[in-house]
Length: 137
Image 1 (cartoon, helix red, strand yellow):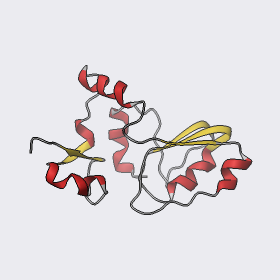
Image 2 (cartoon, rainbow, N blue to C red):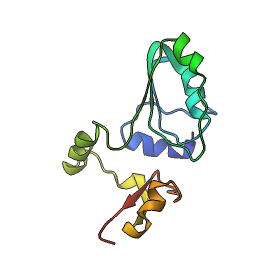
Image 3 (tube, rainbow, N blue to C red):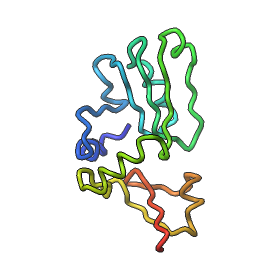
């Protein structure tokens, strides 16, 4: 979604990065939307090959509209992933062993007193992508 985050994506291991202004040149067997923009979930489906997989990680502050015909007629499997998914344990392992530095993702740190605001999406993490809740604060 945001070209200014390309460097961040590359530091986190992304080999390809596309924006609405610079869309992918072709279709892929799997596409991951981690933008948090309400328009991208529908647009991203254009880039999934028939019988491919669409993974939604980003959550927008507004509802996203996806045409189910795009999913059904192209036999696309769509999956949503929340932070407490099966991928959480390996991610923690990568953070713990130092192979991934999550620091660049976090630009806002709050205590438990503001956790509800963070989980409700009422805190803007700009220029990062995540809000960190530190119970020690």
